[in-house]
Amino acid sequence: MTAKLLPRFKQAIKNYTLVPSRGGCFELTVGDRLVYSKLKTGKFPDEATLIAEVEKALGVDPFTRTPHR
Image (tube, rainbow, N blue to C red):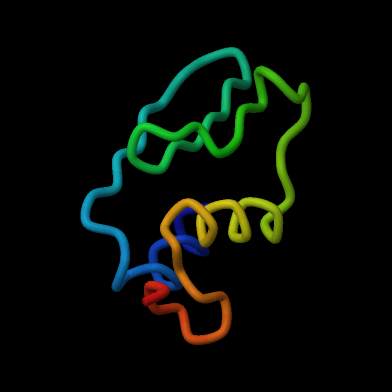
């Protein structure tokens, strides 16, 4: 997932932290906002869903990949 998110949002991401865990936990937050939780859904997300949620959370235009103004 890192390989998909970092190149796509390199202009909008100021900090990226990966925290390894056990038990199949996968959560993605943007700032203080939880945008996806495998613990809540019970399934691993597809890439398109995560990308759309990160775009929304960052306020990034999906076509230009720049912040909405």
